[in-house]
Length: 410
Image (cartoon, rainbow, N blue to C red; front, side):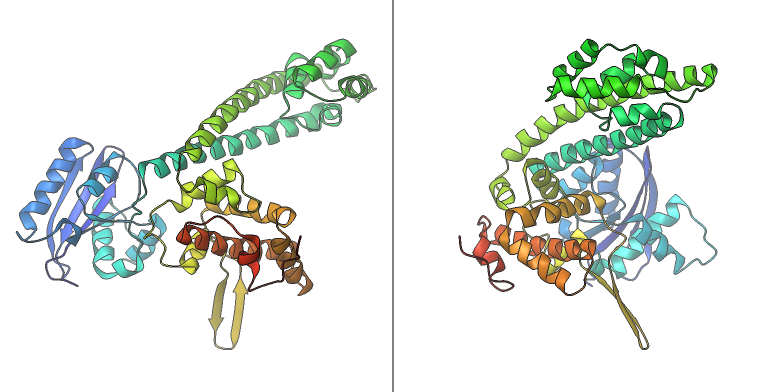
């Protein structure tokens, strides 16, 4: 390591940063608690300037911090420092190397971070130099995905409540997230009020939701809701009904915001220069493309090859070997923000791509299960995407699978 290099550990809290500066020998040069914001950044620059040789370049200042976003990180990147966004779990494990009893403090974490970038920077990933557009796509795509996950949690709670006191509603409304189901359940959240819903009211709600076969479905729903049901104590029914009404209103709000963010994500994704390459991949549409682009970023130096991108995606298997025992298992610790859309792509790709279908069938023929085959297919698709991005070329079915399976001619 260059003796002129300066190492900084930055432990971030909500309103302050604990920092420690070290030289190449690990000697502490300075430590301080800095306020968040412009004043804190200015003091950090001053500390670095006091201990850096006059001929040191900004890139020779290596900073470890447990985040890759926010105004503070943006300011560090703008100063041309070399930034490493370190996973908090890595910091915890590193700290245990020197303190088995488990003490923890903000200053101690800053000390550990400075040590990490001094001794293990070759094992850490520098923060990606993504464009503001890619960062914006990532932000919106994550927000959209989070709303969908949160809506699903509320749907599960709604389903559990209905199962407890009003199971007929689950038979009448298989899709609880549908606007027709939410409207009718909010209006009639208990068996008595649901039984009084007229066929006309039900049909109107179905048509308002652009439902097909509204009359036939309304007949079925009315029959189910008016059927004889087990009685429940009135006090509990009142409480459950209030809970269901609240849940319906919350899920309705989620639906509206998910639709709004969907449009924003698509509009921003279409502005990116690689959007056409992502859309050309089998099984990837606008939203999946935006999520995958946002998580991979657009820094061309971020991945030094297809294997690095696959490892980052979390689809590459893990080998564990000890003595005579050797096992190959799927990765369990990974970024679900990228793993989920890639899994959805692998699930859809065999329908759109003969090569993907043949590759999947070949893996299944070897005895692999459905999910294991999808992981391997996803791993291969990530490699194909990497090649397309590196060459700045859209997906080509024949070229993509020429080394694996014979693609049937049209």
